[in-house]
Image (cartoon, rainbow over all chains, first blue to last red; front, side):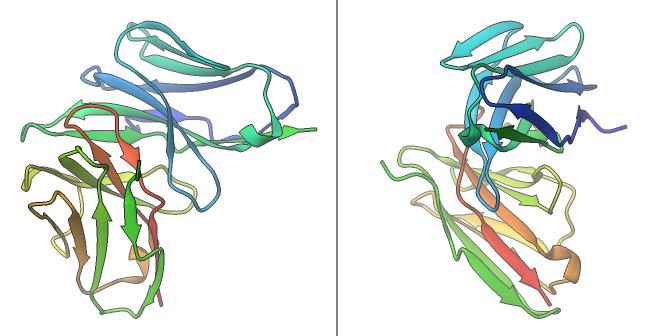
Length: 114
Length: 111
């Protein structure tokens, strides 16, 4: 079983729709939770960063974390064609050497159609 | 402000060769991490360096090594390249244990 599970999609929605992207995880030691957007052949771009259960909103994006269920979500309101990309969830684990590493889901490919 | 810069952007190497990838973090960030992303997968952690010391290592063979310089830039070295090393190599910059910002990556093709 993977530590982080994410539905790879592809997910196709009409412009203006609300998009829901989800990840589940098995390691309760994960402390920080992130969502990245990655366009084809580019590096991941950080969208949201949170460390506690609950909701965090930034513009059209809302990140939701439920640590008791080991479940995180990203909601995109009023989706635009420019939101078409792969969305990666990532979770941070503190290492014994004092650093941290991110464990990623496989990414969900989203297409927003006109 | 300059973001994370990586060089080169693309390169092609032959099996058995050695490669060096370079990364400059965001100004003020002292931590650099390296990730490997193969097509269709999420990035996999290779190394983290903070203040020039290795702070974490992922499940990669000893052919992979890295170092961090006094100006906090970093190099990732891969020896004895295999076809399976073909991937997008990503560098992430952070203040340790905070959000990580990625560069555009180096696309390595091994033939």
